[in-house]
Image (cartoon, rainbow, N blue to C red):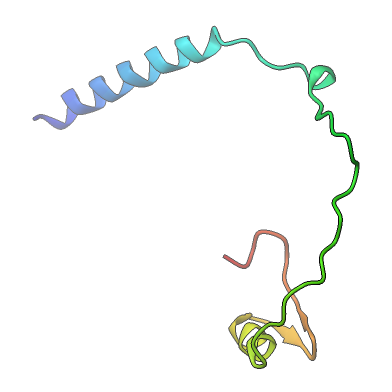
Length: 77
């Protein structure tokens, strides 16, 4: 297939999708909520982890300081 034909088809598909998406009703932020009987979950006793987990975790981090990972939000991926 010719590159220009592929671009034309892709544009048609995107335009058609954009038109269909424009017709979808948006949820109002005021109407969005979760109704729960209990506000907070009950904490369990927890599980024991591997002894060297913390060490391996910190070694994997690009930057760390003693017991903490130093990272910017969304930067460490």
